[in-house]
Length: 472
Ligand SMILES: [Ca+2]
Ligand SMILES: [Ca+2]
Ligand SMILES: [Ca+2]
Image 1 (cartoon, rainbow, N blue to C red):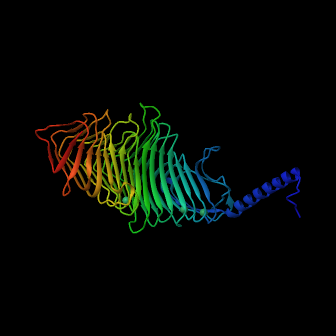
Image 2 (image 1 turned 90 degrees about the vertical axis):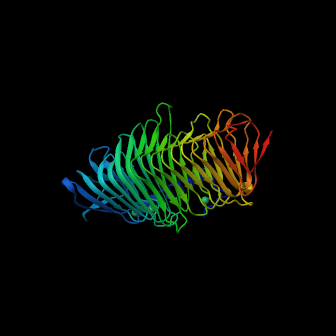
Image 3 (image 1 turned 120 degrees about the vertical axis):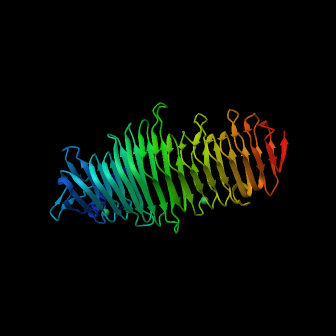
């Protein structure tokens, strides 16, 4: 029997080496035990191409499909020992094809991985089954990508579409996730672009689904159809969207461009729009559950060309349309903006931002027990060119406080109707301007407007209704 207490140093080291060897062998054994051949069936495709279906087992099937780095041939192979059996034939390490059309992966259980690179396909169907699966699509021209995944509650799946060497185009990405957490990421690198027709993601009884698109310096992600993320409202799944760019040099920013609508509709979620991102259709961020949701546009210079609707329901929600870095220009909203944060103590911070249309903010009801005991809203450097309408049924604190270098400019009527609380114009500089505004404050409660500094207005036209004015 091994005496651990009186073992010599050299004996201890030898034992550790044996243990390491032993555990490595176990790992290798386990890997081999988990592997089995992927069945491959082919059928004729158009123009002499073939359609291929890969059917895996509950092992960890990993398939690379693309131009082989040594032979230059279109090849299916693997780095983890996955083998292939073509149309019931003998097991082989790799298969070559002259040209492919529709390709389907049914990989069943296990942690499966699919990599598609430097090739052209017509339709790609990814059914990766239970387990934590991943797919990489790199520098590949594909017409339609259909994804079906999410079998167990705690599995995590990741789908990544990237460009490094060549700009390319995908017509549609359509994904259905039934359970677990799944993410689709699109990255454009090295000055190349990815153009995608439309993106449609549906979540069932999921933990979360996510979509992100990122472009580095000089690169572009261009999505010419609608981007829609929709989770079944009868469950509790959250949905996330992140659109952003990295800008190595100011002269060559990357860009994420959506030429049509962006829609997120889920029980809960967050949406972050940053960098040089523009959305030319409408933007909808609608959450219907009890989560603390977030809508954030706080860096870079995003542009919202169409109508923006943010509706976040129950929970303490955060709407942050502000910039922490003063060198970032104002976020631009070219259409109407409607923000509704429902029950809970919500935070709405805005500025610098330009609103070319009306800005409507409904802070809903608040609770004395949550953070701050009220809804909190702050308007910094804002240029509101349409009508401003702020309402709250509960307690709300509205602060207008542009920085000394900025302006809060309200060009049309401004209305603040709060159940309780106040509107505080905290500005030591002459930088809060109500052009020709009728500033209506408070109904039914009397609200205090505390002018600390100068408020430029047209006194002949400005009319404050039902308000106490304090000047200090
Ligand atoms: Ca499998
Ligand atoms: Ca899976
Ligand atoms: Ca909420």
